[in-house]
Image (tube, rainbow, N blue to C red; front, side, top):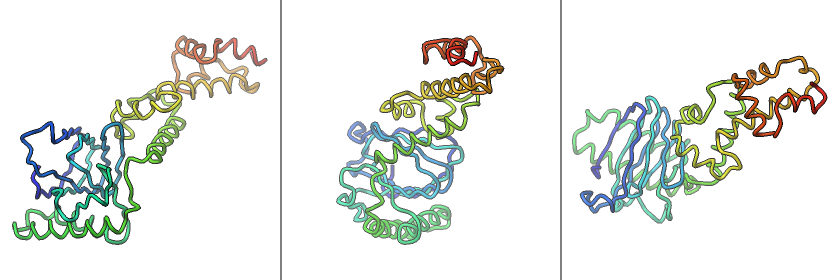
Length: 272
């Protein structure tokens, strides 16, 4: 990547892998960072075992020396500028050991940085080479001020943010249990994340994504099977209400979770 690059990018869904610079000897010795502003759509950034979902309005800076995966949603619109690591704006003392950092948005210097980046990249064909160099320097100076101004912007890779993502997925599952299409693939599409990363995030949970869906469905079905008001409702209809339309499959799944068949469970609670 050019160390003086400015881009306005509207992307179809895509996956980009940026390899570690040491594995690419043809890359120049001068290490690069990229500053990006998400105008619309979303971008999922993966570095190592961590994942961040960046929505509209997010201004972020990323070390391209780290192996990084970028996954864009439908019609994601980004403004990008590359910055050499010896640029005064990219003061590594502001980053510590982080490879990617969110810069707090809203009024103030960071908003001015995003606005100038967005305007320059959108009107790039109208700029002369001298004007582009001036704009590049101006964005770098604004970035330097923004980083000093909002150290609280913090590392994108926080446990709290990853936990919030899990909670959002659990909420999505709860709200869509009746949808027969609900599964890891549907969830990955909805949150613009790869299946691999979705499963990785849930490795630290007591249940994986598919098991979480199954257990929530079985919990709801069991509740209705215990309910005297539902005693005349067919077991298959209760299952279908919660997204399981195959009666034989439901019976097997129910037994795998609770150790008895749905009919035995209902009878054991006096509602059979």
